Amino acid sequence: MIFTTLKFLVFFCLVFLTYYIVPRKLQWLVLLAASIYFYLCASVKYAAFVLAASLITYLGAIIVDKIAQRQATYLKENKANLGKEERKKYQAKMERRQRVVMAFTILGTLSMLLVMKYTGFVLENISAIANVFHFSFESPMWKFILPLGISFYTFMSIGYAIDVYRGEYPAERNFLKYFLFVSYFPHILQGPMDKYSDLSKDLFEGKKFDYENAVQGATRIVIGVIKKMLIADKLAEIVGIVITNLDQYYGINILIAIVFYAIQLYADFSGYMDIAIGCSKMLGIRIAENFDAPYFSKSIAEYWRRWHISLGAWFRDYVYYPILRGNFAQKIRKYFKDKNKYLANHLPTVFALAILWILIGFWHGSTWGFILYGMYHGCIIIVSTLLTPVYDKFHETFAPFVKTKIYGAFQILRTFCLVLVGYFLFCTGELR
Image 1 (tube, rainbow, N blue to C red):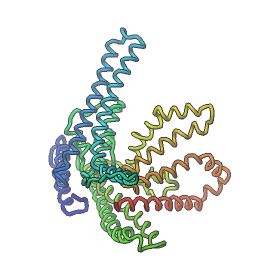
Image 2: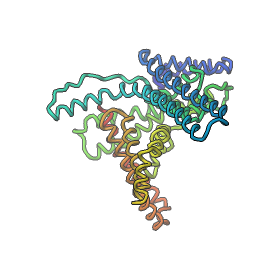
Image 3: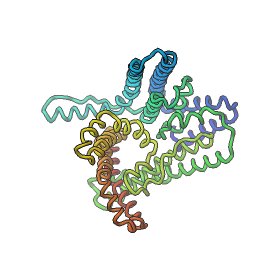
Image 4: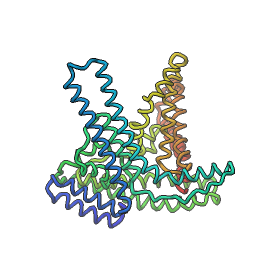
């Protein structure tokens, strides 16, 4: 069910009316029923995937939570009898159990996404490598239609399980409530990737009808529809003609097409976000903003803090920081600590950023175009990180000029041009 169709309009009107008619304590059940129906409209066949992801992370989080509770109870009851070493051994034992449970939880959930999205890509590349070495390997025609929103609900549910493992909040015992968090219909298509701690309170608390919320939400929906249908869809026709026939176009035509593609992509994605946020606003529910004028960024790092904000936050919290604080990064830092302070400070960051941006490229799609897109942005950010002392020196030396609007405009234009180069890799990656 697409957000910009009449079917969705009728669906949401019915949900909106029912939501405020039923008693407040039952409102979350209306949202759950609506979310299940919304997903089943897309495909009954693939509903099993969102259910499986929810079940695996729900049970994994509960087991991890129970281990933590058992540990806390045991240590409290035996506080006087346990020595320091015994206490450490017991804590290490419980930690290992939690890690094993989390490993199975993450792998079990992530494996569905990996199989559905990347099997064909892996087989194609194995076939290509085999042909180079003159081995006979025929890649089977193995291509799946991705279940609706699988990239988003997979990462959201994994993030929830990791948060419980970290002790940020207790595991949700009510499976239906947790399933609503995972499958909530406004964000299942294209995000945002809300955290359970941010979204759960609004989802499960009863809401009184608020006229201002309704008007603001409806206005946001109209803006989103205009972006999607009058801007994104129209530009997509022009961009598609050029990008699918690159051998027939040159120079300025391709540049104009890529600029149009940048506008189209932003209007399409942010338009969907406007509709999702608007629908939620009308229901009294706050979901995360995902865009903050990204094309006015003054650096690529800033661009990614303002474009698909929830995706960047997810990778930062669950990939980048764990790698940066992990054993390998610490070993790099320790090895260079007395030899070269600059390398000791920057090499772990470079290592973490390199893995991060390869994974972000993979997340966007299963072609080399998407992978190169991630690596391209990663390289720019890594180089910028390594040149931080040079930038600082330049800003200090030319402080009056750096503070001018001209320099600010130059930074914005430079960043946008770099983004356009990345979009060329991105849009060609979409074609395959």
